[in-house]
Length: 117
Length: 247
Image 1 (cartoon, rainbow over the protein chains, first blue to last red):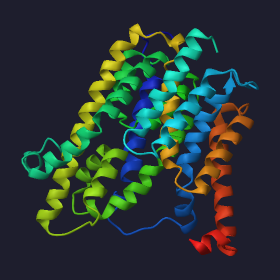
Image 2 (cartoon, helix red, strand yellow; image 1 turned 135 degrees about the vertical axis):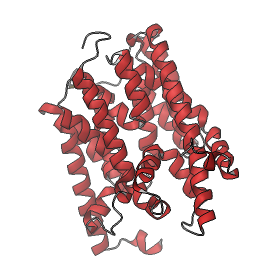
Image 3 (cartoon, rainbow over the protein chains, first blue to last red; image 1 turned 180 degrees about the vertical axis):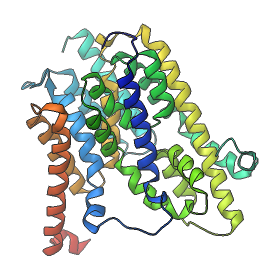
């Protein structure tokens, strides 16, 4: 993708994602008829969001250019530890997500920019 | 919604708006970073502004951005966004009785604007649904105020992020803040041991199957993790552990 060129495909993807936002946020109140998901799907639903997040972020943390990093001298690993320490130190209360970002970046940026990890 | 005078003149509108403002600093930082991340990942200014203004779902945007940048097929991007958004399906089941008195168009608009934050705050203020017409109206006024502040904070900070992105080079690795944000959301979803299993299995499977084309490793990882958790749940029920009996 070249800088600042808008292409139709990306715009269509963005419109599609908007439709997904509407669909997922309103799925159970679109129809006025009573209906239910199958039991197993209802139970499965509670594990899917966290699985989706983990599947997206874990490769971004432990892989570089499609290969497992295989060593510990990587700024990302320490950033994740710092973020986790903040989140669980706060027991998920208050601005825990923001704190995870800030604590993680405070570790990540010096290690990445100054130390070169 | 928030542009209706019947809502913004109602006292509950202000209560909802104030509740949302208490959380606005977090939302603002997250929106700002989103703007920078979108441009730094290769989206054009127009695409970034469009996405920031209309998709209105931070986690699915963050998940979709690397896929768009990698040129993944559209169905993979949309399916990934859908899966990341699946928690909203659960919320919509919960919110259904609060919404069904509204006409379809308003239900769709209200649902679209109700993020995680508004859902949590709304159900905290109104644990019981239903009631008289006046009570239903008060609920909607609260939600309108809450979502209104949310929307304005999110969209304006995304625009600022898009503008500032020109002075923030990608080599700094600020995009990693997006991964940390998703990590924070992941932690907040990890409320049971089996959910931790789901995250661990999905993460490992996504790395192991990384070589698959079309980012199919993500879909595979979700399917494996959910199937395994359903099996573990079924076996736990068949033979309840000592812990469960104590609890």
